[in-house]
Amino acid sequence: MGIPLWPALIKSFFMFIALFLIQLPFISMALQYARNEDIRLGKTLADAFQPMLSIYVMSFFVSFLIVTGSLLLIIPGLVLFLLFLGISYAAIIDGKTWLQGVKQSFAFGSSHFFKLLGLLFVFAVLGLITSFAVLFVLYLVTGFYLILNVSVIITNSLLFSILFFTVSFYYLDWSDGAVGTEVI
Image (cartoon, rainbow, N blue to C red):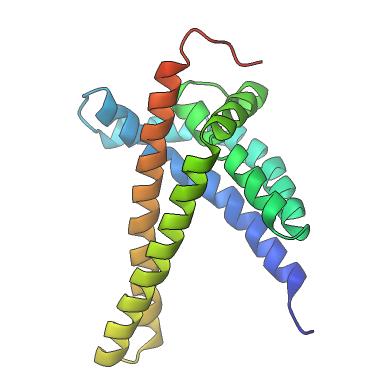
């Protein structure tokens, strides 16, 4: 049918890896804010770079699972994404990496599955609406393709950061409630 399936899957694979890594500084900033600390760039970068290798390796395998699950009518890939979304949050907030982080992420994803699904749906709809509105307004003003693309990138970056902060606070609330319970 002319649908470029394999290039789309490869692109999705690397986008999921990047998503797990991009979240790290935002989680650190949310954690500093929740602890009533001054938000410092040095601490944010140190918190982000410290677990980066383990997050990269884990996200490689998890992204492979998500993309493979997406081959099976997209729903299994979405379920796996929501279950393992908390890998970066477990590394920054709880200091759990590797297998402990995966277990912690699975526990968080399964306990907040429908909240995360709702958040993802709301932010997807907001992203579509705001991107369309920005594109429409800028297309009326200018027809330059570069300006249109940069504006969509900036708009989506702002929305993603709000999503990362929101999920960070969900994770912090859940993590505080889960203190003293061991994740198997």
